[in-house]
Length: 231
Image (cartoon, rainbow, N blue to C red; front, side, top):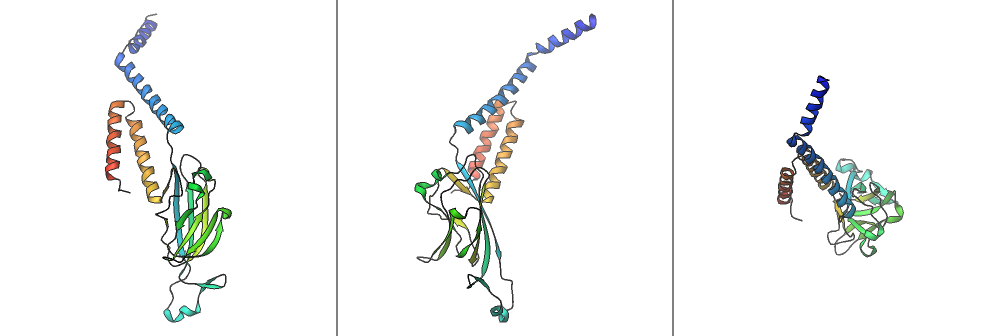
């Protein structure tokens, strides 16, 4: 009976140790508030779409002596290609929502400028939504245009093309084909991912002290804003 009484007394003491109880409550409240905030932001927030644009290119002609250059050539549709390169272009939906045809401004196509001559498209997993356009004036440039389409989360649109010259790929700077959707390159994507992981780690580590956690996160956001290059 004495042992049972002592155990009951110790448990009662622990429950009436208000600093411990308050600390536990603070942790539970902080975790619940964080989860609720994330849910509310995803459910009701203004979620911008994100499309990751990546590419690779491979020269198709080896380095050969000048006197032998006329003996080896690459052709496309029986026409010779100068300084031929094979280009693989990928657009992946890395955002939190599907990309739909309604996200294309007035049903405009998304123009990707290769800054070289596009001889033709070889393969694509969405051939009905992709075409090559060659513009000669005022300055020659080759475009790959992506027509309005449905690209669900994590889905990829891939295009392979043959071009003349070394490509320098970019979305046309003067075009605004997408509404509420950001097009990012791999460097920006990796940077955003690293910031998100670091921010999540701070939230987890400081979740039990909301005031300190909020101060650290505010300082983190201010530092990111100060270091982020101007658009």
